[in-house]
Image (cartoon, rainbow, N blue to C red; front, side):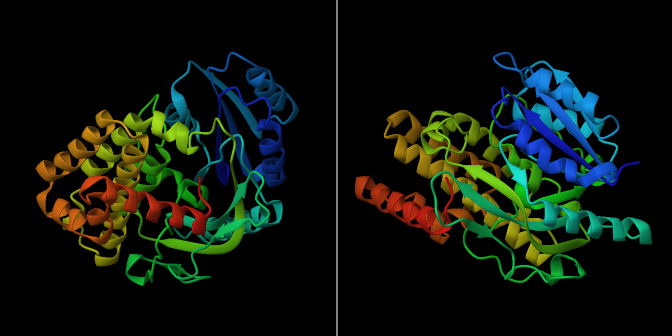
Length: 339
């Protein structure tokens, strides 16, 4: 059995996937690298995946499937994982090799001692195209360092500070036991990947290293704002799914409950901002319908989100109110360096 399975969803990724794989090979025999070719047709993605399987048998494995989207590729990776722990690395991203070594050492300590670890969290770096200053997302204010802890020990999450797919490694069995299955042909499912397992997580470890390098700034990326507006229906779908997984108002642990509510709050805000920035009446109506959907599904949560600071901002009346929300979003975007 491998220590860590890393799944790389690849769709027409010829231009950058080899850099990603190369950085992951530094993990050696302790790591299983699943290169999931998600129905690529326009380039050599499938051939490159097969080449790495031939060159590195026992480490790299090529899996070919019909196109199912990012979520479908992650599902396939999880279904085929033999590692004790599981991580997703997108094909245009990469990892820092020194931090990678520390990650494997940390995971190995738990396994060799026979201790259970549900989630390992590391820092990630926004590798933004053209940016001189690289923004590091760390969790110094939120998590104790160098020890196992639970949700009761979590400290303070700042605005914009969330556990993302880039920062998390889950225990593989936990993901399977909680029934994680991402929707196919849908972008932004990385939010579900992180969010759905959280109530099942009991033992957490924060390793304060800048492990994951998250590349942003390419015009065709799913997180490009123009692309996100064009795919607003998928953002809405993911948000509605997240709203329905749990009645978060009834989660017993206060700090976990607060964090999950915050996460839903930012998802509602992103949907609202995209609808407003699109400038179409159709999308403004979708924004209204989303809030009504929440109101009908979970009134206490609706009241908590609708009359919180961000919820009030999302629903300011008139054109002036919408412009104020977009301005606040731009300031946050500038400060945290996302998109």
